[in-house]
Image (cartoon, rainbow, N blue to C red):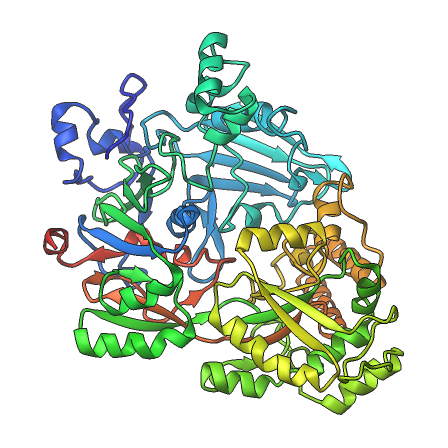
Length: 639
């Protein structure tokens, strides 16, 4: 199980006298390895200036090491959630959503265009190899700038105002990213739940790179892996975010030890993790994480039966009643209700890049999108699905955000069938079939197909209610469930007419948050995948935005990047939110439905009130899951 290759030859003793680090306590989990000489003692495993966490200052209790955390996922590829939950980032969000160094010891910023990253001396990968600027250099020179590994070249964030930034490596503990113009989104990008990993374990990956590997050995590796080239082999082994290669070293709190085909994934504590509590106990407190793959429909039942210690993914608002009943009957867990940080719990995305030219022209008419929104009975959906506890309205910043506007929330969101029909009539869509359906300009019946990932019952229930009210508009809603990956690929290719998903991940932005995700800069916004591709690939694929409101969003996002005035940035944000509310690019339905979080009674330091959001926050990540602990880890392990 412990597939850790310990590189003892490179170890040096840290100069602890230079830092106020407390006396470190050896982990019981690794005690035997230390005794046998297979691992160095903890004083040689953590950086000379580790990230010291004062739990008392955070209002948390100090924990003890030990125990196994049980959690569930519905797909084997969701092992990547361990990278999200673990949330070891170069810089990361704190509980108040401010940024602070994490893996880095410090960052020097000059005019938002020059970033000097300072690494922690003595920091090591999970296999004991030094983590230095050489790992950033390998990423820059031999990954993103190698045309065989990365044909598209460096990531788009490296280009600002049409000019590439530079990356230099003055010494082993220093990396400098520099642009001619300001790039204020750089640090927030590094703090994302799914960040660009601008470093790689060079010592591990070099064995798969043609510039470093012995040719015959590399050829054998290619044949064994059954891939077409050394570059394909390198990319297969290099999965920093997917986390499905147990051999690749990591900086996360727990190390994957399982084969990707197993239905049970086991993660063990990283013996070289860089965070330490102020009592000298190396984090994470919990020794192992047991992540089991089960059918999505079984997650709530298993949580109800007390078979998990921490679970939120795979649980929905509709599961709260059964979870509360299990809590009362069994007494082994608590069900917390966290706020949801997504801008909308359910949102419909008409694909403005849809391949069908007739439908595309109809959907690009703002009157059509407004009519669809006016034809939704949000009150009925709220009562039927969320007992009236959700916020009814379109997709915009949530009330917790300083940018919240009631006008944006309620724009075109109050059901008005007569007004919706008038908008459609004004478009000239007046011809109808004998059954009452409106006809498209080419004579086809207006059958609006919305594709779903088939993972959330509330989406399908909401669409079922919308089906009835849209019928009063002369529109037939057809729901088509698909596999999530198939759905995404169809959207990106322009073959999906419309889809249903969450709203923006970040529903609680501030003026200092980059508004790039409100503009066509990313294919992940399902209303304009081709426009996002065009931006992301620097025009190599996709289509340039050709609607004036979308072009205006791009200009505003650019203006935000070129000012440091909080007043101007606030004005830009409000204007962009107004454009979205007016244009209804994505049709929000409900927001702020509570997210159930099942927590074992033995598990401590889990906040009773929190925000469940992918970005910013990385779900459990912002709440620092490495600080959670079992009050009785020995009892827990025996069970």
